[in-house]
Image 1 (cartoon, rainbow, N blue to C red):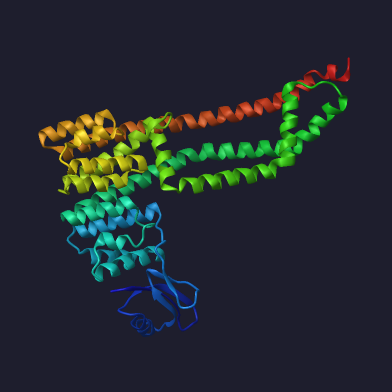
Image 2 (cartoon, one colour):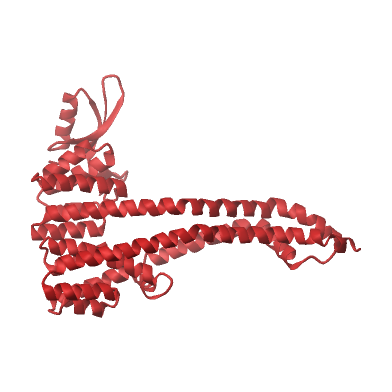
Length: 407
């Protein structure tokens, strides 16, 4: 049954809004009147009206943050694992959600399923709410008849991803704030304080140390061209973003992350861990290997690795072994390929992939911990060095005050 987003007023005139299921907009209005509500607007939950005459445009840009997606996936996984149909699971989760946007998305997905579409196809209406890897995994689970197992894996994956992202953000928050405040203070000093201080030295007419002259030059530049510099930086960032949106440029950029230092090791570990973990769960859920590789490829954040993983699926379809195809791809760690080879030879590919994913995740956690631990002292060192240069540039003329006076 379709879902409708409504705005209404009760008998006291208070505004009400929410989601209601009905067979048509007219039926939705009748149900609202039965609840002693005056309907003000009733629109399909998956659509929005554009103020372009009578044209209606589909609204497929509704997003869902990582925490909401993790919670929703866990709830749907639990209900489907308890032999509740996907339609009923979506209705229950959507009805109890406290976020109207989440309810709207879930009931819109349910309505598409009731109209005869598959779960994966219904999710594709909301690409910002359900990422590509999510839809690909659901499609693989549906085709293999192992949707509950795949949903359980997705719940674990989304929750771990959200937790890891939150932990990394919290770890980097203090260094980022420290760098931002330090740079802001330095810019203010350069623009408003340093000019008044150096006027005393410049008025003496003596030759100033190099650091002092450099400080005066930087201060004058920021005073005269600071706004233009900010505008130039904004334009460069905008141009880079437009350049990055071209698929070929994104592929070239991501290939650089995989092939070049200093990001090569981290990027390979991250993408290999995501790929191996998803492939292990899908293969263990009896998803055909080629379909499982396609779904696991969508999990990898690096587009170059994703393209190479899809090439692996093509080569496996042609009849070569997974180990040979992954070796040919040239983007996976040798440890992962060796474990895949042992899993293929023993006929226990899924457990082997699970062990490889666990090992890769442990190495990745150690690498991230080390990198985060280095960020804070590095920021302190850089900021302290800049402040030291500024202090020296002011103190050197004072130390040489006798020379400046001409004594």
